[in-house]
Image (cartoon, rainbow, N blue to C red; front, side, top):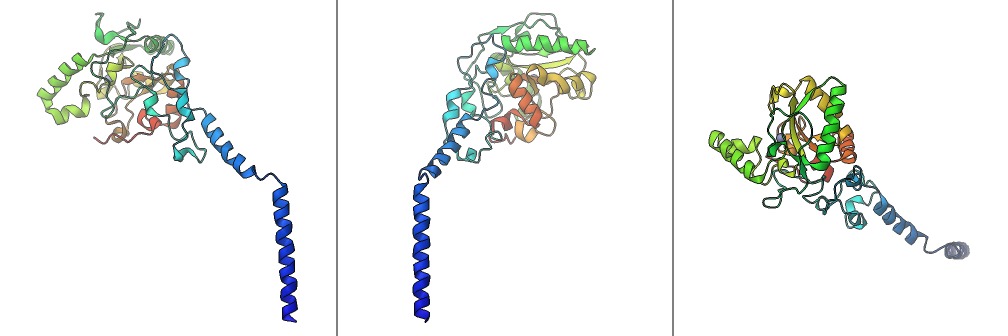
Amino acid sequence: MSKKLKLVSLLIVVIAVGWGIGKYTTTSPTASNNSGSNINVQDNLQAKPGDDANGTDGGITDPVVANPSNTMDSSDPSESDGDGVSSGPDISSAGPDSVAVMVNKEYGLPENYKPTDLVYPEVRFTFKEKIEKRMMRSEAAKALEKMFAGAEDDGIYLAGVSAYRSQKTQTTLFNRYVEKDGEEMARTYSAVPGYSEHQTGLAIDVSGSDGKCAAESCFGGTKEAEWLAQHVAEYGFIIRYPEGKQDITGYKYEPWHIRYVGKDIAAYIVDKGITLEEYYDVVPVSK
Ligand SMILES: [Zn+2]
């Protein structure tokens, strides 16, 4: 009796398995492979916010710009969940001549790097002379002119304080600070030569037209600082050292120091409330 039942059960199982295999093999056996490679393709096609940042305004031919072929690199397993937006583009895709270059206490510029397209932006500065610190790279200079004009439309009168700075000038400045405050202290507010964002020609310190509190913490909270915080991204700039991000940027809050990165990256960074370091997903600067 029980033996017969077992035989019947076995028969049912054999039939069921046979039917199952038959059903399975009549549908496409490669379906699972296809879906696997589709995931990779989608991942590779995902637009990264920085990819076309250099093409938006034109005018500058960057020999080393965000490299589109890098998006074909699917070696990063952290992106396989499809959430490619949260991890930034490869930092190596933004060389020193890219407007997306990152310079901080860990990422320096090539020895004595100097941009080849420095110009004098036609905006108000806190001084009259046509000297080095009045210069910016052409794309950033154009954006700055638009930004100053936009500010004036809102009744805000800005002035440039200090823009491009050569490695030689930075060396002189830094040595002076070291003499005054000692190296450890100097490093907290001044960049070591070769590691200043001002050397890229993409950064500028801005004040009100009266030059009060120029590049000083009392600039924070002024109507000019408020305007900058609200509007710089519209022109492709970011407040490079935001409040509360010292552990990441390596610098205290500097409401006057703005950095050109192009409109796309600026919009992304402001929208997410992040820093350039976080945009590239690099190890935070600790000191
Ligand atoms: Zn600065």
